[in-house]
Length: 379
View 1 (cartoon, rainbow, N blue to C red):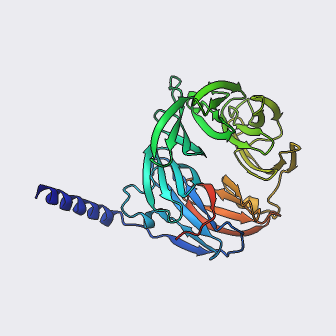
View 2: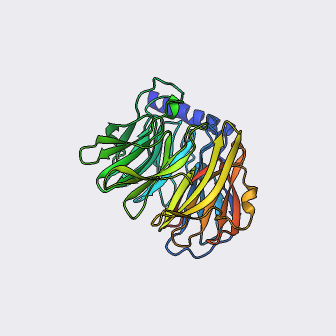
View 3: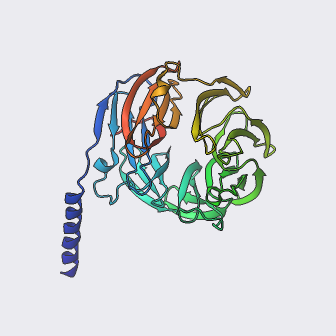
């Protein structure tokens, strides 16, 4: 009897919660479709402003041409708090869709075919995710969201993708960000963002067999983005210190585990690799000038030369308030750029042809960030 009574109380509480805060249905927009080969569409993760609990998930379907805004709540009405606070990374591995939700201290795991909730993994101040074999690897600041010169070192968590359990951790540098895996080594960009102005300036190298840090590569302050090219080199971005040290991009050899090149000509806020082309947008802020220097570049990773600093060719880059994310369809070579606008209201996603001309745009959730392409249509 007590169990039945408790069950009824819980049902009443849930119903009351949903009466106050009803499920928002997804918002479809017809932007036009097309043939993208074996790519059916893409998911887009919207961060949501910190503290607002407004992380959301969108989906675009090439077959129908429909852009669906905010699909998670509709497909998961029983998940309290929905996706959570500040979506930081998104990836598909096997049959699962993984969303790293930073300030909610969790990794949300969904069915990639339906976007329905499977489970969650608790990781404090989690940041980015990569995969190899049966494991997922998630970078973690390991402490609360606060600037603290005495903050603890960060770590990388190893997650069993079958059981969704953290099976090991490896301590790295301060406030670790993006990662790449090359062979049996995991490379981690350490930012030290909570220790400003004493930023970290290293890339940690982890041996995956022992899951121990074997060395730190000295690079530059406030590291963030990473991409591994087909020639065994890692492109890693430094955000500088926003004052005297300018942002730039470095090249690390995975053969020697050392910096082999420095591209002073290239600042990077985000980048994505498609073949030998590295697509980069930069929105470099300076506290001295109180302005941002914005560029949209393509770099040939084989020659290490900038092909263009203006991959948007039709002038529509002037529509952007705050460019925030970038992705390239590996089949069609369409370029997708997101705009966070004022960071507190819905953003936009823009789709460009390989020639840099606008094909379509759509409204997104707040602070649209990560795009991941999928080979199966959402059911």
